[in-house]
Length: 259
Image (cartoon, rainbow, N blue to C red; front, side, top):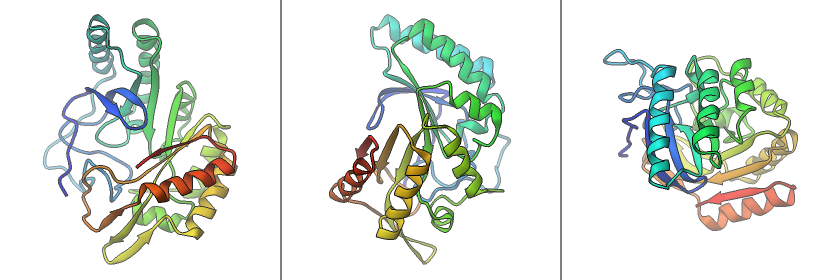
């Protein structure tokens, strides 16, 4: 049940189970979660329905300055990151200056850490916005969430906030023309008395068919590794994840498994 928030704009580096040595960028407030999803497995807890105090997003220039300082520091120590990762306390593409911040990050990466990749961990809710979509095409690791091929399952697991068009999201994922990584969390359990399991045969078969439409360059599958705000969720075994991964490989995709 214990969850946490990232208390800095630039955090880490941390050892990521999927990405390597990762230097994080949090474009959301450091004292509250801001997200277009309210995933029941989120390590940052639930998204507040209202905020006790005013929250603000970091300015583009502040993000650039802090990233530059950290990369120079890491370079001086001879410990540059494998990847610069946009993650943090919610959905990074909600930031109104996201596209410009990506441009700044590419510039700093090229000059200070040329071997580092740039990754964005996103829930795909903002990819219908052209500036966001175009910015994501500029980076190596454009990682988008797809926890189910069924909208009703997405609504149970990811709990979208505000307007959410599942079919439009799928169409935009297809529009990346393969320049996208699909990330899927596999869980089972219950929430508010409703059973959930996205590892059933019906779920996996439909999800694989969507992968064939999207044609991602890689698929990342994982399960719960940290505390969640809901205590009725169950971790999927590594054996089960590997069995799903084998089906992904048989469908012609590179797959990464994190148990």
